[in-house]
Length: 131
Length: 131
DNA sequence: TATAACAATGTTATAATATAACAAATAATA
DNA sequence: TATTATTTGTTATATTATAACATTGTTATA
Ligand SMILES: [Zn+2]
Ligand SMILES: [Zn+2]
Ligand SMILES: [Zn+2]
Ligand SMILES: [Zn+2]
Image 1 (tube, rainbow over the protein chains, first blue to last red):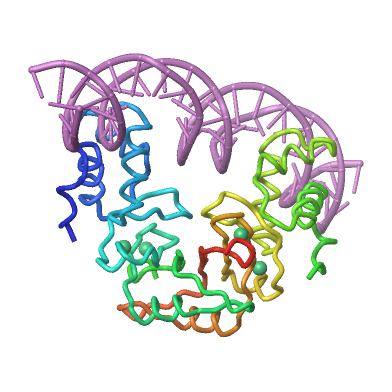
Image 2: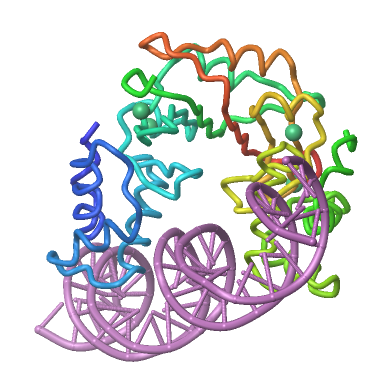
């Protein structure tokens, strides 16, 4: 899961490092605040790193939250297909890695018979603690 | 599908009307520009209407695009469960209404046995025209 | 080693998206 | 009518994201 880290640039490593240390999704400007001590002073430095890390699948963007989370599912790097559960009370986010689900969605066809290998699924509800 | 329109407020009707006239998702500030001739001058007036329309299921937010599309699937009003196909080339967006898909996702359980009645799924690919 | 080509970084400014806060008008209810 | 709640109007500001360009670092090869 960390095997690609050595090919990352300095800024990409710094940004990935702080996201991986967080159990929960981080917002771009919160990341920026946290990496300022390491010399990344301006938004573009953070967003560039985020873009690259998303592109190579090391992190994912939680679209409904405008936040970024480290990937915990090695299959993602290849698939561009992601699924998450989000607690609407405590905002806890978990990446779902279910080969059954991903197979089902990858094989799904719309009314015109179209298939989509790339998708993002966000489930909402209450987590165990909050229920 | 339009049965609830009479209960909407003036601004909500104006905003819904313009979104329904568009085949494709509209961005909030594009909506704002279009409704200025009707007296809605400031962002909060548009965002309030959007919030309400999303809440009652008349429109949906395409999270990956920060854009809003009219609902074409009467089941949505109840379910809070949505699925879309998005063309990465021409940005064409279609709401998917597949009872098979919605049943599958509503019944999906994560590793801890949790179920989620609410979800948003965005498929990405190339539409017929762009392929 | 030079030097060209390319990639990564730094920096400033600004664009695009969204909400807070409060005042005024309107509608619903008693 | 008086009371209450909802909707609207308005200003200002917060949050998220990118454009543009200068600088530095790295790699390739002449
Ligand atoms: Zn992942
Ligand atoms: Zn929770
Ligand atoms: Zn719908
Ligand atoms: Zn297309």
